[in-house]
Amino acid sequence: MATSLAARVRDTGFTPGIRDLAPLLDLLADEDEELAKATERAVLRIEGRHGARLVSETVTRAEAATRPARGRLAKLLGRLAATATAPAEAVVEARRWLVAALADADPKTRHTAARSLGKLRPAETAEREALEQALFEAWDRGGEEDRRALADALGKVGSSAARGRLTSAAALPATRAALMIDRTESRERPGVVDLSRALAAPVAIRFHARTGLETVVESELGPAWRPRIAGPGIVDARLEGPLARATSIRTAIHVGFPLDPVPVREELAEAIVRALLDPRALAILRAYTDASGGPIRFRLAWTRGGHRRALAWRCAELVAAATSELVNDPTGSTWEVVVDDHADRVAIELVPRGFVDERFAYRKELVAASSHPTIAAALVRLVPPRADDVVWDPFAGAGAELVERARLGPYRALVGTDIESAAIAAARTNLAAAGIEGARLEVADALTYHPGTVSLIVTNPPMGRRVQRGTHGELLERFVDHAAHVLVPGGALVWAVPDPARLHARAARAGLVLERAFTVDMGGFPAELSIHRKREAGGPGDLNSGS
Image 1 (tube, rainbow, N blue to C red):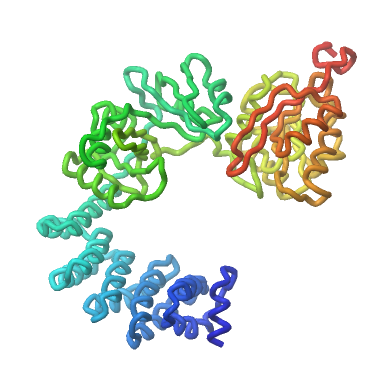
Image 2 (image 1 turned 90 degrees about the horizontal axis):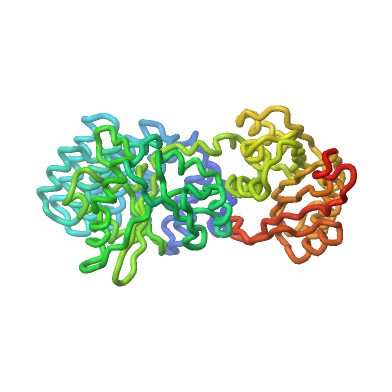
């Protein structure tokens, strides 16, 4: 049975029942570390209604276990007790055993017990004070490695009184624990980014978008912003007036305030903090933040990826030593400080995070492969809106393109179709949330549906290699033929094209002229956004004939 269960726990689709708990706990004694990790994940998938039994049996097993199982059970116990479904009495039982394990003979068990206790912050003041006391008693008798784990726990569950004791300890783990307590306390006075605020003078601002959409963002901004494409997915501009003007741009993913690089003359952390505490950086943070009486909270991010924890800690320590106005807090921070570091210089960008982005609040329902809303917003901007437009989205999905076209400007009619009834239901919900009435939404096949005579087809078709009706390329070739049939002369097909060479050739044969095409990152894979326009006929039905 053990062999069979060991094979099953490695399957991420395995969902054990409570009857599997005892043999699963047996597996935690195996020397195979990967098997132990898979077993822990499997135990956490047992239904939450068994929370009390899960904790109780894990405690019983931990009391009799030896290493390595004892340390692993301490970790599992902390995770079980920290779940939202764990009963209060189970949390108390787990905490009691973990406190006792702080004096365990096995170092790994001691360290894991301390870190697990950090996940179990008591709600009652008396319980928290008792836990703090137990952690400090372990601190006094422990060595450096013990104190690292204990500092992690004290930083998460400690009070202001604990902070005072940690500060007096004057050791690196204690200093970091004190900073963690400051973070926790600052969350009681959360700040927000106030989009209605403005700086007195224009300020440099950076728009980040999907790579390939730079010219579309530039067009949406217009010349008053003095936009300039600064790199892949980056458009720099000048903001005058409230921050809400920038955060309302629909084709950008987010905005930030780039600051001039500073030279690295000392350690990298000091250069980063010097850039962050520059008067221009502080002016931006102060101008747009309503800190509600607390500090301005920020988190560090790195353009080169990774967490770089030691560097982040060092920056946090230097900021704390320099000012109480800023607190480094990776959880729920108001600002993200994006660091781009080189051997001789470092630049930071201040990215506001502490606000609600209302641009796409209409997205109440999503379906598989729903369009990213900035892609939808870009698609509808590729041709100027006309008040007499009859717009059809044949692969409507959750309706993003229809909503974005309605938001862009006047039109005569909106039509959306999809072969999936769930997609049409989602589109109907989202259009209603956007306040758009009168759209015609139907479950229908894009290859045969006749929407009437349309002037604009705008769509992001399915990008899978195979679909229900033949290969992907075959489906879209047949769709191109149908699109050419229903469009009026001069009408436009604006769409995302996954196989440009093949589909542009088919469009040309169908009488659709390629007007513009450019490659865009669709979220991990490239596609072209293209405009194909039906050749003018000069007769009835021509967009320019007045009929």
